[in-house]
Image (tube, rainbow, N blue to C red; front, side, top):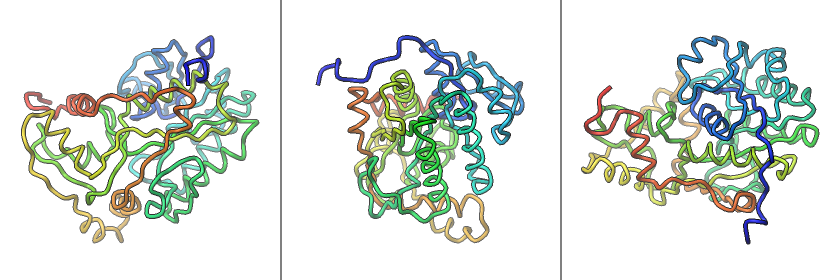
Length: 333
């Protein structure tokens, strides 16, 4: 297939509202769009705090408001071509009461703009890991966990809103990157010491998919540039980096730092013990099957659109991640 067969880039940059622009994936997408000369608007309850805490770029047009308030979202969405819905309640909290209302506000705002395209970073929570070794747009969504049911409902609402409100979902594996603050990589695998002095294995040797945030964000930006070539409800998979035996990430960290690390196991037994109390242990157990069973992402349709998937070599991606975390030897906080 030659380059003429791939989706064409829109001739002019557009205007995007990024909800969740202070977060890991939201800030990265905002940065990539700004680098492509897009206008980017951010929504924040505290604009000064957002400007102070933003992870990457200073080019966002910050507006005061709350993603839980439909009027605020509609006000700041005036004139946009795209709404990136990258906002989530922090720390797994309030999913039942906040996730769907926020998405409904985004759908209403996109409809009010005559059909601005909604862009949603997708997850693997929707799927039963034991019966879904490969994820595509056709894979049944049968999982029964709380977060899984919510994510399934999110996708159903976007599908129902099309074609009047077009949308793009791009699913990916576990995030890592300098600005992936709430990732398993940064909070569990190499989180405990600076510089890194041990590696905590979360899985049990099953294959696992990872997404380097700058690559994923670049993929989002390239798809947004080609939005007129997308289906009205487009659901894609980002293959990312595949750890076939659960050791590739640990080995990459060791190559980058130049010495072997003690390997520890994540205390899932403790999560089970504390789960009845709620909070992180209970929520973490919901995603345990994704660490116990290999789940790959089929990016065939993505390659049809882009030709290739943005992908930084694993060692380079890990090096940049550790550098951003100030976890490389010779760095200090």
